[in-house]
Length: 599
Image 1 (cartoon, rainbow, N blue to C red):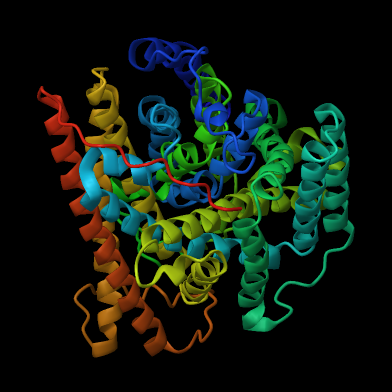
Image 2: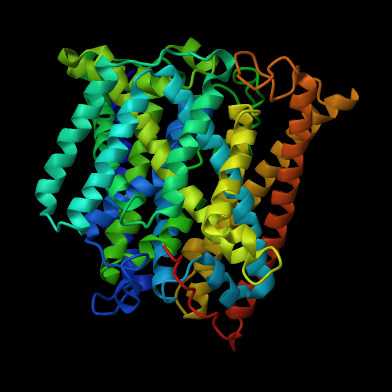
């Protein structure tokens, strides 16, 4: 059994169960003391747009689909360059002691602060300077996420022909479901059956209509698909949540979670199906590179490469800006917040398992379709009658669904943050709903079509995990303010702050070195080519290294700004924590509850 994924997956499953059933409930009794009789913002500020109570079962699915994206899928793909054992340990230990505490805490901090998002909460805790610093960091962070995810969505539509039409089918089904649930008031059980039937039809379309062909526009194919993706994201940003994003995420949950279960079952049955490990447990502390790009040392880079599955700052934005406004009763926060995060850990575990069994050459070449290959191999081992064509279409669709549904929320949050940042200023027009959305999509498209996915991913991971560290600090500050134990989130906050700032500094260094090649300067000889010009990597002008190096310098500037904002925000939150730790606690007039987005 040691030559199959069975034992390692089983141990991780047991750890997640213990974290949820025992550690989680003990933590709630000791720290948060959730109360089902305490009114939540969903009831206090009910408006049917942002604030509305949702069943914990539906909200868990919404939360899972809103946070489970490419982080726990492609993160392990990069992390396995060090061997699968370090990645497995981080997925289990990180989630057990850090990840779900952040997700649960982000929801509860918002609920206990009138449903405010982290912007107004940071104003209450650390003042206007800290709030503005956090919002600027979040804006840059959302741009990096968007560039990374738009690139991958476009790439998957290209390498898995027909999956685009399956994606359209899922989105159309979601819009229909929204009308059936909120307009026609149809029974949710019947709506679910209709959803499953239409999703199945969407998969069949991907199987029997594999068009257009891969690379049908040559080097411009992926930029074209990236532009098509912007249409979906624009609609997601401007339409009300109950009309578009919420029902689409409800529908997308079913194929997405089914994909996770199919892989996990395949891993558990691997001793019977004869599927064995092909990757070593440990390779090296400093890999030579992946598809020509420099990955970096195990610490700190592996801890940001797996940008979700263990912990993710994105989750704190979803929990505080969206989920907390839909929480029916406080006691639902545990199954929704903690439950969804631990469920996402299953996705990370499933993904790592899939990479454990694919050919080493697939990993070495940086083939981003390796997840589909491993998932199809697992499932085909115990469901051979489905066939590889159908499995490839299904898992290809699931891969896109994981990415695009979360990116829809990213685009929406960018629009809301832009409006909050520019409100009352001379450039308030930038925050206008349509203007902010167009800017928030155009800039990432440019970054996406000029970037190396590996370096973009590590940038995203560093910013994402630093946001998680800042969220843990805000949670700790709230807890120390109300005289509850804060050490459970404080220690992870310190670790994540040091790790992620180091990772951002490293990536900024790499981009700077590559960009300085424009001037003939090369002080890091182990990087043979600029990170943005990789073998097999598409860019708008793949042979023009001058343009690539200019963008390298641009990314270096973005990294430097993120690093400085991260340092500044860290000083703010550390200072605030120390103030509230020493009685009497400092007080500040709370910021007014923000108005709804006007959807």
